[in-house]
Length: 380
Image (cartoon, rainbow, N blue to C red; front, side, top):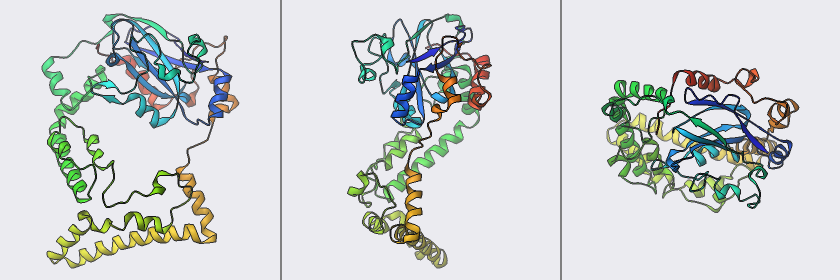
């Protein structure tokens, strides 16, 4: 069983503190699955006139024990939550990713009154909600419309949100955007265009498979992060080998680097700068650049050779490679002290910030406490 809890249902400021607990059965399953950094996914949605774009979501490490959530609509709202099997960044990318202003994944069904069927795949669909041990029973909270902040003038919202896709969510975020818009936004726009131009030229010079001019020609449609998609498909001059589709348990052999990257010197981003230096008679810089590239390639090849053929170094290299690529297996929730804090108990009250252990009062949580006092959310 996993359970969300409210120590104080007061939503005067438009925010509320949420804590959670779980039972021994869920802890055992987490350990059996070797999930070292389980995440809690929280979804707040209005009961009436539900729509996917009215959801408020948050992904927090289970280890944090509590967080603060904001409401986006007046009237009855439900707080849904569950434990994700995905670790850290994967969970955030999966559940918080948006497409045209709407979340890319579904947490609730079409009507918003039940969990989405995809979350019930490993459960008994005929059972009661309480039997879905990874999912919390939703908490219903009534939110007065008066708790929401007054909307800023339309003309100011247009300028302040000019470079942002998502609607501003609260007063704190609007203040940050306002400082940005009036202080550095013009310079950021120029720098943004320059970086897009650089990345586009670099993608062309490296024969990137995803090369396109769309990110440069439509700067208001695509973010700078979207521009990095130019390189997602790799390069025409870097071969995709069968080994790339498998988990490499030891440092790759020299042959792997040769077969993958032997065409890299043909990239314009490699030979064009050297050619320009030579034609302009800057022979010394051209020589330094050439030698530097050769040294880097030699270091990679020597390291690969030693890691695979030198008896004394093979084992350390193999262990180091495995350590860099292996996920953490520190199952912190199996420590007795952690078990006592995180497990549900009839005699234990829901956690509050004041009752939280000192080592859990992170800077992020302290900021949320302050934010809940001085920033009201905007209504959708």
